Amino acid sequence: MRLKTLSPSEMSDDQKSIFEESVSGKRGTVTPPLRAWIYAPEVARHASRLGAFLRYDTTLGPRLSELAILVTARHWNAQYEWYAHKKMALAAGLDPNIIAAINHRHVPDFNDRKAQLVYEFSESLHENHNVPKLLYTEAVEMLGETGVVELVGLLGYYALVSMTLNTFQVELPEGETSDLVP
Image (cartoon, rainbow, N blue to C red; front, side, top):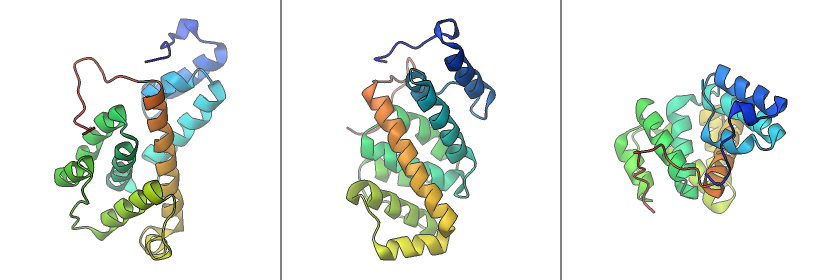
């Protein structure tokens, strides 16, 4: 990583409190982007709390959330994000063929309209910076207004995560590889 990973003994009291909050929270660890964000404690505090909500507590559920995260990782070519969330997507029940299609920048074949909708919405927002009216209307019908707001939040948050990981060149754990196609 371009920034030094701070040990607790090198942290200010504010940084230590964020570190401890992360370790004692649902994640149980200090995530790779937090190792960079901790240099700006208020960014770390707010981003970490938002991320914990978006990762664990939205109405989308793990399978649809992980689908949106993988679309975002693919969009940003975020190797670490792909490496970490591919495993989580598989554990959440996302079809490996869908994951492979996203990796190779192909449109996946879906047998679930809600997952297809999340994919199309995510792709549209990342690629076109907007969502067409018909797609938006269907998203509200299928996910509800709360679900659509949470999906946009999830996509934005994981864009921030991907930018952080890429900018600070966060490496994969030793001995691990990512199969994300360049």
